[in-house]
Length: 483
Image (cartoon, rainbow, N blue to C red; front, side, top):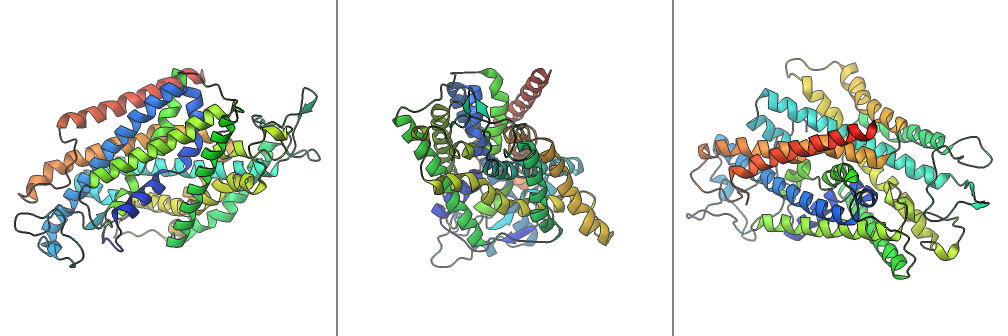
């Protein structure tokens, strides 16, 4: 992030609220593409893969948390405010106290973003690497949003169903191609309608990138509530379909060719590392913090398994945006429909439109600011035309071009997660905690109260080797499959 700096925690909240916020941050677009990735890799191989990747993600989350703790101690030493952090209200317990009753300097009392920690612990090459990874990841994020929202709009708007074997091909598991007409009375294809929707999406939301907006608390609450309702509906409807013995899915046990894309989807789906400081710092009582994070990851893992496993056994063909499997209002066989409640059909179909659209301006502005940071110098500010026009356009044009070129949301999620996502989730946290630990002896003789459970240097080496092997495996597989 650009000029993240260090700020006070702001409004604090309990562990339970923190758990919910972290859950809501992690569970998003990736979960909508996971059922199709599961179907491609096979249910057993997918089960093993997601368990391993959730553990790896949790490990590096503890690395980021430890680096935040060390960064807090370093800054308190520099500011001469180690003793000041011992101040607390009578209602707030002192966490991580030393033997004199003072709050440990390693307690996370001030928010230190990843960008600030990169400036503290990395050299110029490391800082550049960090910024490039963030920019590529944000470009991928915007491309995913720019494809998922228009695709959902397209599938709702296009009503034409071609004849299949003399009857309308409108069953629940019929996935129509992009070259099929959108309406019987028009020459527009479904791809044409998709590209029109992409253009409209950028015209409506792209303008926010030229200004500054902030996500409101109430918008976050509404988005979170709709997410829980939507995913809950999909799980229940899929279970009912299977329970009534109408499930049409017969997934394979294992298919190694589907693992590379599943890897990218899972990495993307467990991503929270770049926003972790904003979520952890306001938690009042940080005792047993890693137990809290472990509980969150376990709940998210169970949640992903419920969504994915019910989906692959309920449907023979799965859309890359899973919500679209539940939108088949013109099904030929009403007895085989997912639900007869039109509100549910349209609510699920429109779910990505509302939730992703609210996040798009925030991410595009973050990307714009990161692009500015690459060449910014305080003594040489950017001219107006470059600052207010060129950088916003630079943030918007590439994602728009990618979205116009492809509407394969699952592919975009897989690529983003496999490369930039893997760097942010594995490489950067590992390097941060490695260099932070080298400085920890300079801060204070007191023990590090938020040290990661994975303290051994072997874990650092293991994660680096793991990340390198995964990226090589994914790259080789993509080269082979594209030939």
